Amino acid sequence: MNLEQLNFHHLFYFWRVAKTGHLTQAAGELHTSQSALSAQIRQLEDRLGEALFEREKRRLVMTETGQLVFTYAENIFGLGQEMLGRLQGRSEGMIRLRVGSVATLSRNYQENWIRPLLGDQSVTLSLESGQLDGLLERLQQHQLDIVLANEPAPADPDRPLHCSFLGSQTISLVGPAHIWQGQTLRVPDDLNGLDLALPGPQHALRGRFDALCMSAGVKPRIRAEVDDMAMLRLIARDSGWLTVLPEVVVQDELRQGILVSVGQTPQLQEHFYAITTPHRHRIELLEQLLAGLPGQPAANYPATP
Image (cartoon, rainbow, N blue to C red):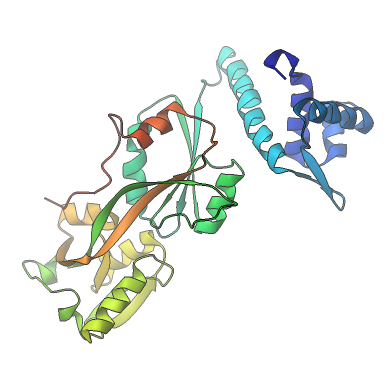
């Protein structure tokens, strides 16, 4: 099959059915009969040589091929809508970049990574967070273009993924400047009995921190366990406790002198990864970021001046 043989009218019908998830509703919106709509989708499936839908009870569910075709149809007809809007003076053509990040990843790190795109008027960003498994499932379904994570994707021969190492950062112990300015603590040796706020058990570095304390015979007083880095940043800023986290999380507070770093250990580092699918839809700006071309943000956030 070549491009000339692809019936875009049939592809449009498939796209509308996929968006509604219901044949009858799509037929009504398209002012055609359900049987005619079904017939045209079957013709598209025959042309492509693969099924696009399977029926589960009374619902139509896209197959893996259907999900891939839907992603391209979204781009084709979405760009068509944007083109019409631009011609009518309502909008501009945009490049969509859909970025997922694990919930335990610093939002500051995510912003640093996408910063080269923020000034690009041709880019529309879709940003979402969640658990790694859920994000990888959406990546496999072509609903995300990339996932940023602080742990590598688990090896799975049935789910091939590309996992690119972006860099790492040493974890710091930070505290209020008015208490800890000019002081230094050994991590974990000097933490016995001190009030600490820590990343929650789901965070990639938490197990390593607990193991360090156990091997050193140190028992800090854990005052808060926080999975969300934005909330951990607020606690570090407002609680008065010492907090264990990557400095990128509190980069603004460190620059402003609200918080100071009082200790680090090379045994605790957070690693950053970019996860993509081997057969992803290629977006030039994303490929430039992944290839480390000019404009790529540094993976390691520098210590505060």
